[in-house]
Image (cartoon, rainbow, N blue to C red; front, side):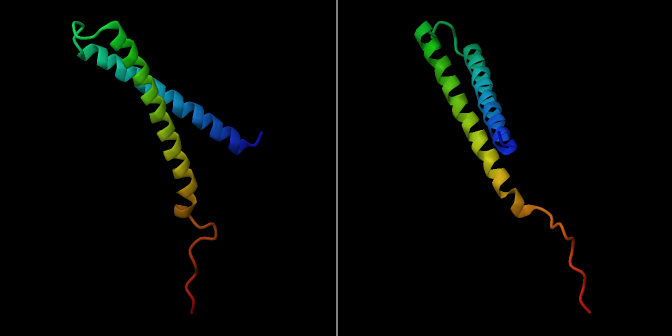
Amino acid sequence: MNRKVLGVIILLIGSVALGAIAGDRFFSLFTKTVPPAVLTSFNKGTAHWAFIFYGLILGGAIFAWTIAGILIAPLFGRRKDGPAAPRP
């Protein structure tokens, strides 16, 4: 397997995992802030899956943003030959 492809796969898995973790953290914040009298078990279960789903979308957005950064990074890189010498 090509090293670049392996790097992109690892980046995708890491980004999606980061998004899922963020979704789970936001769900725990949701359960702490919503009063238990208002929250039914159906709403809690539905909200948990919604937060996870939106976290996965966040992970996809992180992945896309990182790939875009990788693709445009050479436009801002240094020149290998160094600065041009002044001409007499």
